[in-house]
Image 1 (cartoon, rainbow, N blue to C red):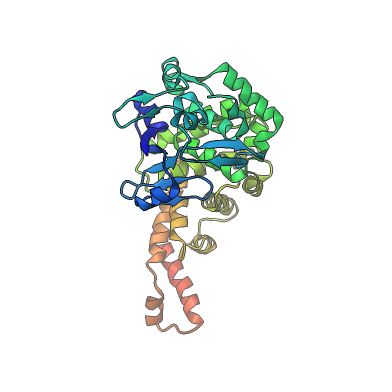
Image 2: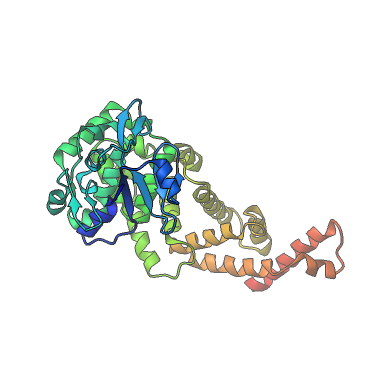
Length: 372
């Protein structure tokens, strides 16, 4: 049994890039042996295990054989006789197919080090075309390392175009596509990712709600991060970035939010935030900012049971830069109305069904006092 550091950790170390996680490949072992050593198996299709202490991923060396469509249409062979080189050859890019042994010695059968020096993203071999997910991964790597001068090798770009033309990309689930989009959003490189996707004619498969890349307001997405960097934002900026992107899509989609949800399968957190944002805008356009109307809005978004949903809405309002005054006013009114409790109302003599009316009255009075 031999263990090698592989993939991103080796690649990023060679690039003097921050190493985020460590993944290992294990040669000459079995699932039973790994479990006997205290490793916990995760997943059923692939022999991946978590280290009992570090929780790093350790995967048995494996080969794969295509037996169906899509990125799940593979038969996995992780027999103990599978060699390190066979495992490395099945990987997507040469720069991801470098291993390092316990002595620091590099094993590089695909010449990944040379491609790192040349700043090239090159596929390891013909098996690349068997997995459509690799199209999105290469586009994501091109975006991530764009500032380091990386480009996609011409032969790899041509292969990606052929894969798109064959329809293989259509086998990816909407949920899996969204994962790749969200990763780019969180690294603030989505615009570069979409440039590659557009170049290989894959936009209709990846973001079908956009008629063309030029129709998306790129500046809204990229400049938003600069704003976050200068403000004290309470909500995770990654979440805000995704919400802002969804908002940009929503404003450019003639069919609205429902169509975006069905097309992209965005998580409910982001969908709810968009709904709340639209609800508030409609509310402000249709009604005055009276205590009664503000309380009605709080009831509609269920401030009392879902305060985290309201907090995210506040940060989105601050994030858009143009509605910070409204955000502050709503925050002050929410704090005042949340301070009113049922116990306080009961102490004033309200009982039974009248308690609800008493709460409404007391909350309106608290909001009115705040506004004045």
